[in-house]
Length: 430
Image 1 (cartoon, one colour):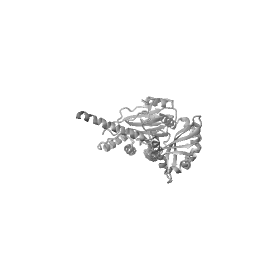
Image 2 (tube, helix red, strand yellow):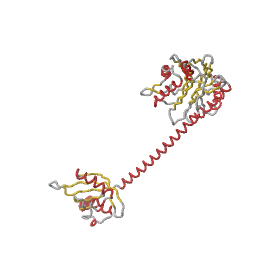
Image 3 (cartoon, rainbow, N blue to C red):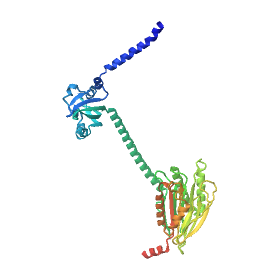
Image 4 (cartoon, rainbow, N blue to C red):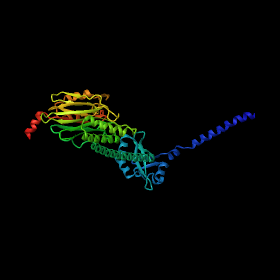
């Protein structure tokens, strides 16, 4: 008997607890739930007079029920801007649709404060279809407003940061452009009996390239030219470019022989960078121009250290490479061998030098093919009878057309002998 009694005691206790909970739930009237709901409720007559309002909304507003019910209209609870919006948009849409949801407004508090709310209203109709009253629900949007303001502040901060970054990038690009220009000659000298033109195409304004070229006189009858490309990008490449350019200029004034000049540069770069643990090198082509006053032709002698071959455009419309196979990179080995070549430029002929950014440009829809030596030869052949400036102008347009397929900077240098017709025309004009 005792055992049985002990088994029934938890059930009785549980049953008593359940009954108490159920009884407590029954005591929660619908009116009480309405009054203390987490959102504001009010009902208005069709003219907007407030007929019913819950405790939650009164508490938000800081008002007494007797001061609101039958005395105020819904619009009296709104700010000036809210009243205007209610009259011009909210009320007309409610009359037309019968309900409206989630409209952002602000209600006034008795102490002068404001509360952002999201308002939804619905028109209730009688049995015969006539509108009787408007039931409105207001949700506290203060947390949402705070979030939106924080988001807005975040966006403003991000926008200011973006503007500063853009300004910094512009200043950096301007500084890089000035530095890049300082590594190139301001202008090309006038070579008697010849025309010279050059162009430097920057693949990216955010990167400092390492391509270089120059033309200058070494004695009363010869001019020297060189063009090349150092390894790497950025400040290190700029330092190497500067050293290379000024070393070649100094070497040429001492001995303008192409092989001798490249040998001097090779020794300087190898001694300067090999022991530092950061070997640096470049490709370069170096040559001399020696005009013949009697014929007007120009003898060209050049040497190449790992550089793409020069291209000769003839007055008869043909074009071909001037091979320099076997020339080694400048600065890699202590005793490097350099390939030599020679040609003569007659009237209407042009010598074109370039860096590999041109031939290694990626083409095609998938950007996987290289423009290559054959592409350049075909392009040059179609323009072989043009003077140097026209050739450089055509190549500039070609480089611009590569778009994002151009990964590397490109330096161009064209040296040509004017056609006889050009000389005759210039003489007559003079």
